[in-house]
Every structure is written in C-alpha cells, then in structure tokens.
Image (cartoon, rainbow, N blue to C red; front, side, top):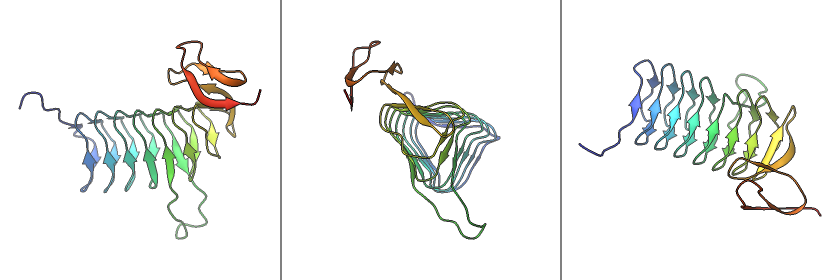
Length: 182
C-alpha cells in the first residue's frame, strides 16, 4: 500500500514474541529486543543493542550501537542514547528487583555513560560521554564526569547556557524554564 510506513528488522536481529514496534522504526543486526518491550515510531535501534523485557521507548528515538537498556527503563520521545548502561546494585543473582528509571523527552545521553537504576534524566538535559549518573538530572541540565555533576544548563537547541537568574539562550533566543540564584 502506498504511503504506509512499515518497520524494518534486520534478519540478524532477534525480536521476541510480544514486542510492539512502531511504524518507520528500524532495528539493526544483532540487536535483541525482549518480550513485552515497546518501541515507538520512527526510531533507530543500532547494531548490538539490547532492549530488555518491558522497556518502553518513545517515538523518534535513536539508540546507538551496543547500548543496553534494562528492565524498568522508560524513554520519552526524541531521545538520543549513546552506549548507555543503566546499572543497579545487586545483592546476589537471586536477590534483585526492578527499579524504574526514566529518560524524559528530548534528553541526550553520550556514549559509555552509566545511569544508575532509579534515576530520572530530565527533559532536554544532556549527559556527557563516559559520565556516571548517580542522582536525578534536572530538566535542561548539562552533567559531566564521574560522578556526574551539573556544569551548565542546556537549551533545546543544544547550546550550553551559563549565568544567573532567568536564562536566555544566546544561540536561539529561547528562555529556559529554569531559574538560578542571582
């Protein structure tokens, strides 16, 4: 049928029964999408990605090669995820539970970042490559390092914004919905 956008699953990918895949989504070689996962429309799931049981990924997301998205993770719309590993503290192989972890709309996570289970990555925030995120990241925050610490605010356009009081992006003119001490 003309105009109908279908999803694509590479023949070398493994998609288990009970997975929902939105229109226009592409899943590449060696990806493994586990039962009950939901992937929105127009997403790209890179080679070697693991999407665990029940993970929810919004629309227009890109998950880079080798990222591991574990049970309990919910990803909003328009999110970019480099190779990120949500990680939790396990007491033993038989004594663990699922902790909800959220990546909100428009957030961006750099390659090789580790996000501890139970953390919320705020909308339009950025996590630098290699960062270890142990606490919630506020909306529009730019965090870097091990452990990750906020170094600036970031606009929806991706530009870093520093200053005090009401913040306005010099690159695009948007006012950020955050307020800093004067």
